[in-house]
View 1 (spheres, rainbow, N blue to C red):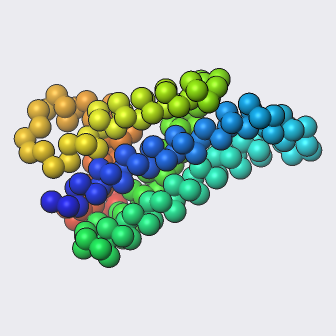
View 2: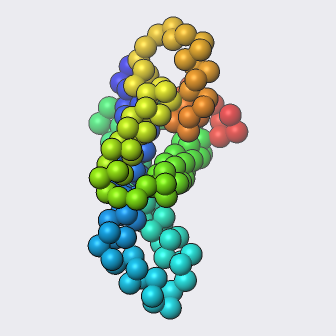
Length: 168
């Protein structure tokens, strides 16, 4: 029973930490450091990819730590290593990309705090990260999960935990 609960937390907090990390874009724009970076000979794409890489790096560390702690402390069997690695990589890329995409629509840290938190909570709830221990969820809710990144990631990890391969 602890495995699905930790899985829900793993996915939810990956998106939440990604959202918090991506807010550095707006903080730096407000403080003027992003404008100074743009005046250097470094291309804008390199700067933005570096910032995206920082978000992905933080999330990679978080996901690896939570997977390891879940295995060591709680004895959670995450599944075949290749399937777990594929899901973990998908989680990091999806959470990083989602956060950076969402932050691109916002203009201030105040706006980002409210919108990012609200969107991450709503998509996390719709994605099934908070209902992992519930039995017999309605088919409509299981279908709603497929409209969120979190729902697809949850299904991937659940398949791995059942012994499914990386292809599944």
